Image (cartoon, rainbow, N blue to C red; front, side, top):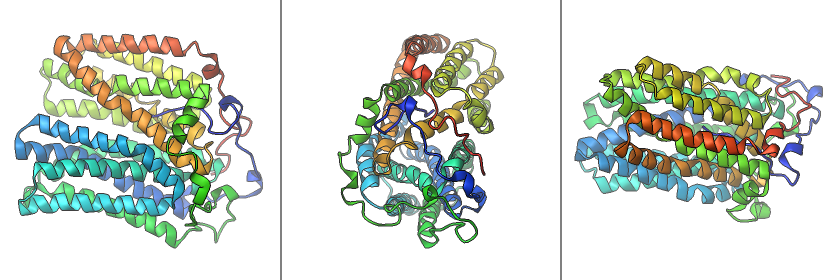
Length: 455
């Protein structure tokens, strides 16, 4: 779950506002007629689905090659290392050069690496060292593509439509999380081409993302011929292909300094990083818990998928939940997760677990959009790539720590007790953050202007 509060501008986050401009004087085309956004959305959906398929296909391939779960885990660890170590440099890159060109390059590299893996499987010359190198390269490519792609959304969508656009992004994210694992299993079950079909599919998905970035350059105006676009919807000089030159000054640590310099943003990111750390190992606990209850593996898969279903169902709730102040929304979601952790420890069977996962994930899209609105939308364009990268690095740091700590707890405690320990730790943290007045009093930027007035 990603979320955040704050401003990259010099004013405090709770006082920042988005200029209203002349939005009411211009009739905006609906998002489905915004060629740039739809092309970017299709490319992002394809790329994300490819990653979801690969996340299942790579462990299956390594297990088939080596029979070692530890080596499969090593691949996942190196993938995370590649993402984290390249995160801050990727932000610097996205602020210095044309972001669409960066997306084209990153997706080209990911398609090439995945294509080589598929060719190695088909030809019988794929080795574990090659896969481990591929893991680092794919992780780095994901960071580079993400740091450039996320700011592009703000370059092609008017401020009044940005929340709606971000909700559509959440639908994409949740949909691919739901569809990816079963699709990967079905594709890997195809014995033709030495089980290389899921890797060919993933390489093709990266190629579609590459093509979408190319098409954005072919028709930069989108719906311009039918509607006059707001200045905020027009591409920035950087996105038009002009070099950023000295705009990206301050170094790759600028995003981290921006987060640290604002008390509200600092507190929000600290809480979110903690939530990600605690939540990273929950799936592992659920798997062990249900296996102890002799639940079949197919049912366990359905239970875990209920979280993605809840996230998908929560997308229409974003605007409703954003009526709460951002700090209140953040604390409320953390309290909901604490309650969910306590309830998951009760031995009421798989469908009880599925129901709790579904409900606890309903607010996640609102949290991710909260991060986007209050951090990324307010960051100056010349710093936005580094702020995006800093947020992704901070949130990603908790994943390996959380999974490792959860595995260690499960070595000595029962799954219900492990869940209760995590719930108690998160409850203590929430109690501390709930005392921070600035966080609770933070307001949405431009609170007097209702977002998405025109869609």
